[in-house]
Image (tube, rainbow, N blue to C red):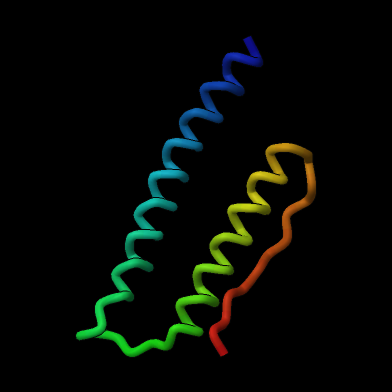
Length: 76
């Protein structure tokens, strides 16, 4: 019974959070519009590297129970 509730809670939260993450990634992608924004290749590389590092960290957390750390992304 408890495992069933934990599973339901996981599914509900995972669906909401992954949907939000996908939406936020698409919003980041909107920054690629050169008619509205100015950026360098280095800026793009930093953004992509930060996102890829976080995905790698996410995978590691599912493989082990590492504590999370808060990261603040800065371009400069």
